[in-house]
Image (cartoon, rainbow, N blue to C red; front, side):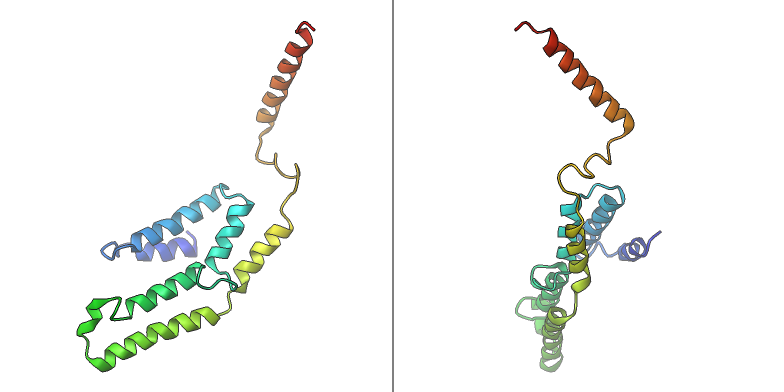
Length: 157
């Protein structure tokens, strides 16, 4: 079991908080797609950018989660906090705002760099495109092409 699997398993039991199970399920689905080889180069690069793009901190997931922290800590957007005494309520809100700033300026270059390297080395034209095709599938395709060629040779001109 991977570190990611362990971390996601620790989120089990928090379904009572709206959306937490969807976040965990989304991470599980992305990891499963990756492990099964269902992500192409573009999906892999885009996923990496969404998970940590230093150029778009309000569009990547860490930035979105930071903005969510800000919403959760603001009594105007989370009325539950309105009943707190003034001082703790203000401090909670300031902590949420600080988190957004810290997240915006935290280095998140690694996922972006990884996406760039993938882009640099992505196979072009036909290079690498048939790697997932088995020998049996390739042979079947050759037979089909040969059949089509035979039929076209026998067609009256």
